[in-house]
Amino acid sequence: MDANEMESQQQKAAGEDDFRLTSTAGLNKFTLLCALLASTNSILLGYDIGVMSGAVLFIKENLKITSVQVEILVGSLNVLSLVGSLASGKTSDYIGRRYTIVLAAVTFLVGALLMGFAPSFPLLLAGRIVAGIGVGYSLMIAPLYTAEISPAMKRGFLTSFPEVFIVSGILLGYIVNFSLSGLPQNLNWRLMLGLAAVPAIAIGIGVTAMPESPRWLVMKGRTHEAKRVLIKVSDTVQEAEFRLSEITKAAAMDLGEATSSNHSDWRGQGVWKELLLNPSKPVCRIIIAAIGINFFMQASGNDAVIYYCPEVFKDAGIQDKRQLFGVNVIMGVAKATFVLISAVYLDRFGRRPLLLLGSIGMAVSLAVLGMGSKFLQHSETKPLWAIIVCIIAVCADVSFFSIGLGPITWVYSSEIFPLRLRAQGTGLAISVNRLVSGVMSMTFLTISEKITFGGMFFVLSGIMVVATLFFYFFLPETKNKSLEEVWALFEDKDTTGDDQRGMQMREM
Image (cartoon, rainbow, N blue to C red; front, side, top):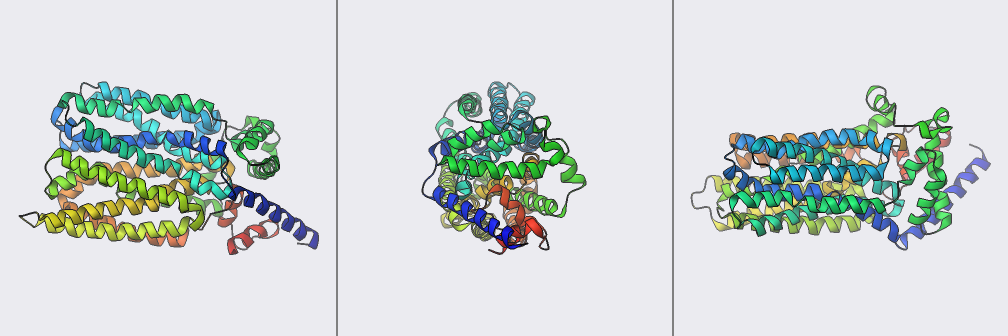
């Protein structure tokens, strides 16, 4: 590299730093509004997780279904959501990010209505299946859209919003459970599930006011529209022009010269082949990181613990349903508090420190919960102090999840793929997330009956120890880097020429 090239790159880096410094002064209000609207879609999954944990107790008694049918009912939404996750990448590349968000809300609306009016187990299961597809769409598209409109210095904060809304939905579901538990048994669970249609309608209408992702517009060759959007989500016109320049160059390199001359013909073709059949070494590293963090997010058992928390504490000695739902509310408040703390400090401390803190804390909390559950299992008197220890351990587990894996999985998955692979790559990673969540939800009770709840919690604690090691060795830090720069973190260390700048950023 000659002196002129070095000077040019230094000037470019200096200019980029200037724009980033301006973005730290405040948060663009329109960007914040768009992130909030997109992430509101995630409240649907959270509400389902929260409300189903209580509704299933009444469904089991009202419809006279078995424990195996309960597991199928609970886990079916998660398993079928992988269909939505896999389809969402291609769909969003074809029709755009914004309309994919609308499609997710409409699909969940249909599922919620089917569940609310279901007269039998088969129709209730059909509603869960439809709702699951909508959940799969929303889990992929909300963080992806937010990441694509956010400035680098605020991306962690904004892209963690989906988890904030998931947790808010869980807490809302707990409150609805508590409020409606006194109604007749054939009515309360129907209202619990059917009320999910209300936010779905509001989301479908509200999202239509959002602009399209500027990065998707650039991929389609609609740079003038992309510039108008970037002007709205940037603090200055100069910042918008700089971001447009970076995105345009990345798109030209990513799509290839042959395609870049006519971007409007691009529909996401060839992505699956590059991801699964012929990936380069950097793409392999990205896939391992994305699939790994999504796998461990659900292998931690967080969703299953939330779904079956009433069953766990019923086994521990709490028999009154309202008391069981009260424990859920306490757990929901803990989750909501710590996910907000994580969102605020994610761009300050970075992804890795909070992720490692969260995974270590979960391993310890699950071990304590396992010991407490084992003690209660062998105790005839079920002492109050042991029950309180278990409640504290559950709250600690979900709190550490909300500090680390909860928000950071969505942030990390949506920011590490290059532009052309981003939607379908993120969809692939989140489909693994949904598959593992479904397997955990559909086997948690069965395995716990074999090895006890205490034994199950010890297994989950061991999984989190392995997860901590994986995060430490395979996930580089991405804070304060633009989406176009994150790619350099996964490139070969012996890269030369233009890639030397990526090496320098890795060393920083």
